[in-house]
Amino acid sequence: MKYREEDENYAVIGLGRFGGSICETLIDLGKEVLAIDINEERVNVYANIATHAVIGNSMDENVLNNLGIRNFDHVVVAIGEDVEASILITLLLKEMGVKHVTVKAQNESHGKVLSKIGADRIVFPERDMGRRIAHYIASRNVIDYLELSHEYSLVELSVANPRFKERTLIDLRVRSEYGLNVVAIRRAGVMIVNPEPTEYIKVNDTLMVIGADTDIERLKEKLD
Image (tube, rainbow, N blue to C red; front, side):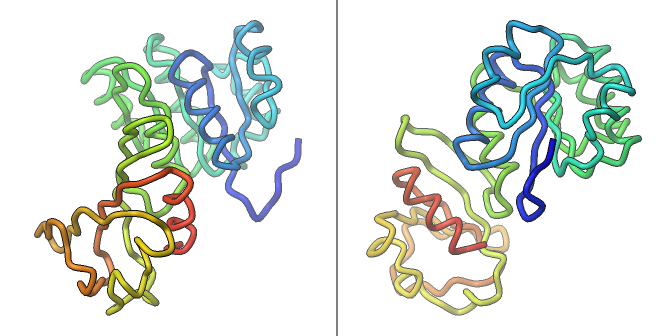
């Protein structure tokens, strides 16, 4: 299986409610996704959704090697209900040198173990948190993501690009071009609520933006 070298690629291990939601959202975001599960029925569901969907036991190091898992930029381990499998798979992934591993934890104790063996991000989803996590891992700028409806969200975006230094919200045309509202700016631990359009943006500011998902995606591309 080959992926476009210029794009980040993702693997999702475990296609339950959580993993399936992450898989679908990453695909919606235009990402390359390998979906893996030991359950054939679950894999069949995602065969026409993910870039590739395969049946496999991810606790088997040979299976992971054959899938070329070490070449993936980000792997999500979404099998929190099976603590032993989650821990073993995470350990294998980190030993193989996977850059970023996000793991679903069942509880705090599970999370502590995952942290000790090198998981890069540990999440404790209540139910349908897959969409939020997918947005987080798929963008360098997204710090947090809150879905308000199927079309509207509130997102925290990091401004790390130096070319936006000392430009105002008007210069960024956040409202006029993107139809978005910046409800607050977090700067060095201080929250500027309802900032004026003439407020200057500084590198490492965090913008709290609310609006349509399609418009937020366009702004994210500009800030990259």
